[in-house]
Length: 172
Image (cartoon, rainbow, N blue to C red; front, side):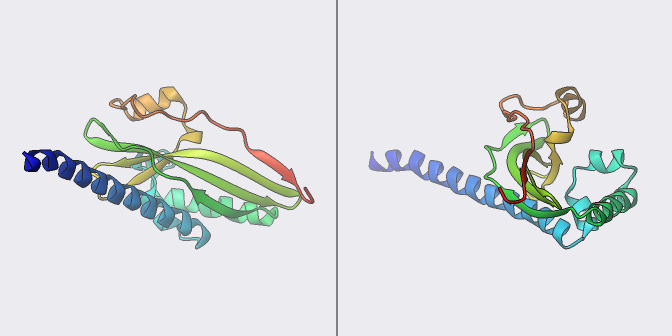
């Protein structure tokens, strides 16, 4: 009788350990994408970007060129990305033949006259059962576009409301 009681507990522990490992994998890959920005490794950043976004930007080479130009223009205006902080991934859900979850992200942009802090959500997508993840910043996508890109989107995955950026002038 004792063995029958322990069996469900064992499976619960195994599921919990798998979820923890998957969460760590998601964060590790999202951090690699974030680090790529600071290292100006836009090719790696493009590799972690959801393929639909890459295609919308005209392909990987055009995307890399556009990001590089945008970052150079920002720097010329005295703006730099100061910090990117990742939160904890939400529960992973099945969406058609993909896995999805939400990862909170806070970005702080340093400007000559202050800082802008922006909290957004990344949609994390895996097409290979959680081995490789790609990311889509949901700040750039409305609900209609999201349903177009992901017709099998699982509505059990709650997307946080978009937040307005917060500007703090220097000296505050």
